Length: 96
Image (cartoon, rainbow, N blue to C red):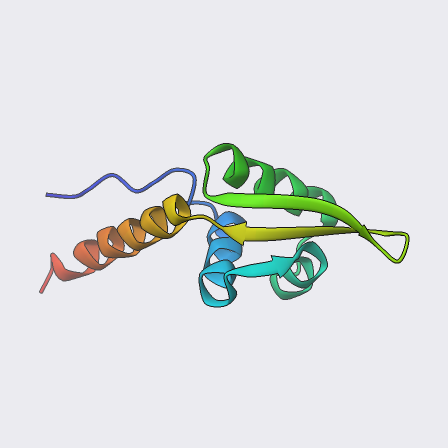
């Protein structure tokens, strides 16, 4: 009856990152940090988990001698997010 929720997405910060990226497709690390109000260290760890799962691509480069990290949602990430949202909707429908 209840589908298992994706443990990768069932974290507040990782879900927030994915929600942001679903809307914008690609964002700089500093933008994500600002929007989620996360610390750089915690966000870095959570983005790495999303990357390891294949949900985001991370690009590191330099812009005007400053490091620039960009995160982009992958097709696998979009599918996982949509499945997660659908599973949550199914949970909410059960009592109705």
